[in-house]
Image (cartoon, rainbow, N blue to C red; front, side):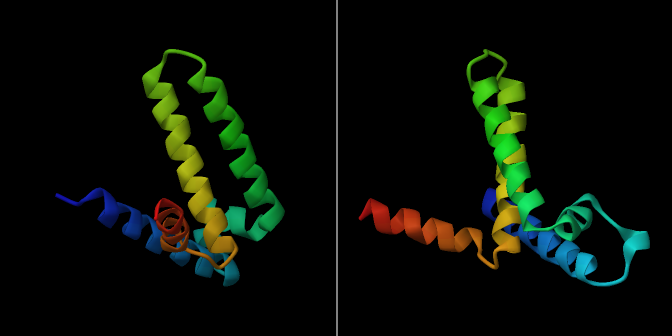
Length: 101
């Protein structure tokens, strides 16, 4: 069974692959992520904001399934934004580790 960390690493690889797809002329093989990258950093950042708002809205309700889905959407779009900025989830984790010391 794949661990949570291995899955995040796999998802990071998929996001990187889709960014390369967006940078190439493979529009006939377009994925959601490639289309998002093609729209630019402002659109990617906007999606993170939208997902954050949706998560906050769901946090006020008692539907755990919807809350987890919105949290997953936010994490996913954050990972896409990190790739768009040339950063990694590991770098963010390092910041958290530094703060914890």
